[in-house]
Picture 1 (cartoon, rainbow, N blue to C red):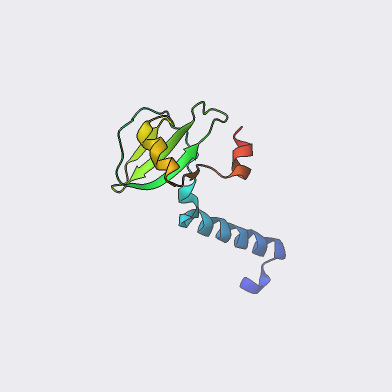
Picture 2 (cartoon, one colour):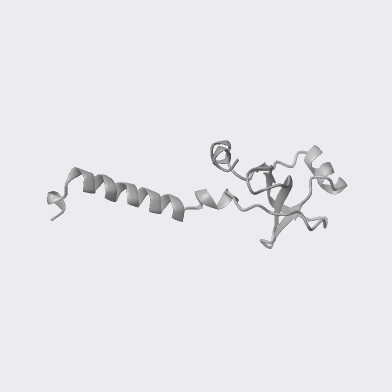
Length: 106
């Protein structure tokens, strides 16, 4: 049965498997496409993950998406002094979406 599959069916099955594995892995978990509106301004201690959100299509706010140790996600304006102090001290906040993906959402 498996040997009688056509080449196009094999390619389809391999592609489907690759997409399934890629989406099930943690690779996509760091890609926060959903736009957040900055509301909360509490000092978050300690910061587990930090992502920088920039303006794009359907997303009108510059903000930082910050996750604490308990997994809570905060959407913070870029202006609070405590955040600026941490950024100046070397807090690394990667983009919320990759530059290639960002082109699709502008």
